[in-house]
Length: 287
Image (tube, rainbow, N blue to C red):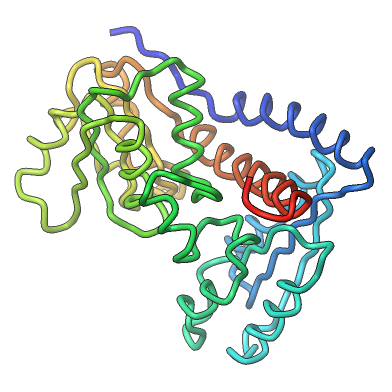
């Protein structure tokens, strides 16, 4: 079967071009969107992500503020920084790079961020708005997946959608966004029975479990759309997703690659949320 490659890198590039124009129009009115990124410790993967986010901001004209804190930063010090950023009118979005060092309480840190500046979409307020069908600042990865589907003209309404993974960052919000788009949604996890059978019923299959090449051809229905959210390293050290691309692709009608699929869209949606937060602040409330 001839499949369509869902190129997230290309879509993210087109979105960034449009956002650059939008930001330049805001700057012309004396408004510059600002994103503050907080990183604690020296995790190499986190450092790479933060560097990429800074480059993305530069590309579209968003002002970027980086706060690199040492590993031994206390909970009190981190919360005080967030309080300062919450009050800072030049900062429209606050992102705390996860994972945090073990001695810090991630949930308390995320709750401390002003929901109107929560461009990751992890604050309980924004999770609640997403739940009731009013996503103000949706989590970037699931929102990026929806943009990929929309751009490719893939209809969600009425389709059997299966999400493998139930994390707060991807799995749960992904299920909600598909549900709001009128998909019939099943969420699978480590306790799901007959996982292959459930997945093989999916018209749209989203893999978000963090296990390299876990989804193989027998999990996939002929003609399904497969979205691979995973970013892993296989035994050879090569970047791979949760989907065994080689065995799966020929069965699909459309599939995202890793790298170059969902990853670039996650970063693009962070920029989109930052611009949206800026416009909301300018308008003095929720748009």
